[in-house]
Image 1 (cartoon, helix red, strand yellow):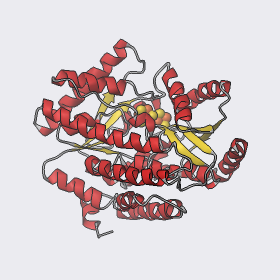
Image 2 (image 1 turned 90 degrees about the vertical axis):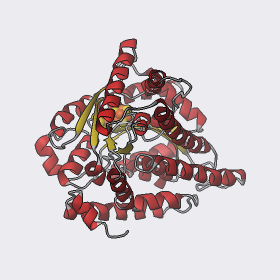
Image 3 (image 1 turned 135 degrees about the vertical axis):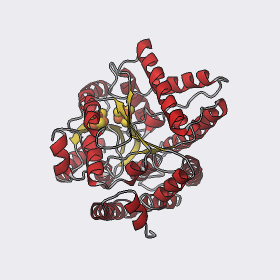
Image 4 (image 1 turned 120 degrees about the horizontal axis):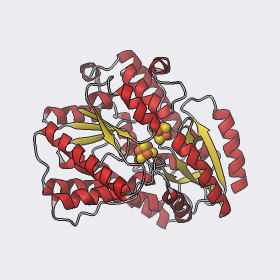
Length: 424
Ligand code: SF4
Ligand code: SF4
């Protein structure tokens, strides 16, 4: 990586903390991803993006800002990228996948908060996340109680916080709330840029976002093959990169890797052994660099064939209808698309269980591992319903509750190994 010290200083990063984070990330990446026996050739692009995630990509974002573009950082797949692009802005995900500055964090929010929330507090307090620092607007949403209340504190820690309210029921009133919130968000973007969003702008935003989701859906579908043509770790990584990279370039590279994978499938080649136990991972989102559980699962010889998660199929399942020819019509289409997201903050949320069953069948999974972050009420509560309903259909399920620490690796490995043995 080139020397980006000046850029990091200008962004206000803490060098000592940031270097420690980069060192940890580099080591983890080498030992988890680069040690895999076989990988599709096209993974080299995603390796490159990760290696430059704090370098070249941040430089690109700084250049975009110099050219007058605004960067919008978000924590949730409910923030509509179509609108961000339509307003001439760039969307980035604020990853929240590792512990940092935990002692400092626990001075401002309770210890028994989920790791994801603690992570973005730690990244902010430790000044280690260039995406947070480069964002002109940080969008937080009222999803779970943890985030909603944590944002009351977080909003005073950053200069540019924007709160989005979200419904919790799939009722007409819930849809109306989402529509009003999306319109308020669009106004905020227009105020920031000083420009009105146009019909053409919205059409283009939808086209770029749909193309990205279509490419990721194509990749997901290819994972139904046996032998598995890509590891679950690499597929997760591609999904994680989708939140950081330039969307058009990213889409091209996902389609390229899909082209290669199709050739391998036609030749009956894969990266894992044929008939390896196949796992569907379901639950909380796994943000970069949260690779603990997938690493454990795949080190048993099993392969993850799908993620029922926001960094996975829940985030990319539906496309936005682009057929309307008015701004309001397109806004309605965007609202309809997002209103289908089956996050566990909704009640009731039977669609999610149905989606898990569909994915299990579509990707020929042998069993489901439900992943809940400790202290995540919505997903842990829902994991009991998921387990009960899957067991009724004789689908093996393992419920895991964990955090970002490495302390429970031994215990998790034992449980996962035993589960994989059952699947065998
Ligand atoms: S799990 Fe729910 S709150 Fe979290 S990113 Fe997904 S939609 Fe947003
Ligand atoms: S993991 Fe659960 S508790 Fe944590 S932010 Fe997401 S929904 Fe909220």
